[in-house]
Length: 229
Image (tube, rainbow, N blue to C red):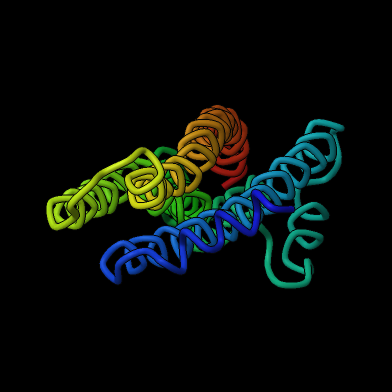
């Protein structure tokens, strides 16, 4: 308890530049943790939805039924379901035209799926750049506060007639708190960024694989339709 009170007293007694640095680091830490929890829910939800969709897709059900289910999802389809919806919508549109070759249909469907995939990956990556920025800059911001605090402490010491450990301990300790706060803000941000960036890459690889596999399926359907015509 006394230690907590001492730390609070050091923060309150720090010079105003150091206090500004501490407030900035506290705000950065708050933003970082907010993004961390938001990304955790988003990525887990997207992965779970993609797992469920792949199970339904490869179960051998009717594509039209699967498409209707995807379009009826509240809030719009997400993840792999969104990529499927974009590709199959384009396939139906071009197949009804009647004068489009199978190769042209598949190329346009693949293009539509790529656009949808880029949107999905962008949605997953939002906020990761902020985590990277907080993780890379917070230690330097904290170090700036520490350097400023120690510089002010030495200026105060220079004006004193006698200097003891007790007189220098407080000013130097309050300066070092800025470095500790910088690390406190940076470490979770760096860990979360590396973890979530890896998960986004893994989902993107899954999206790439699904796009190619679904393109092959659509190519067979397009050729079968062209033979009937």
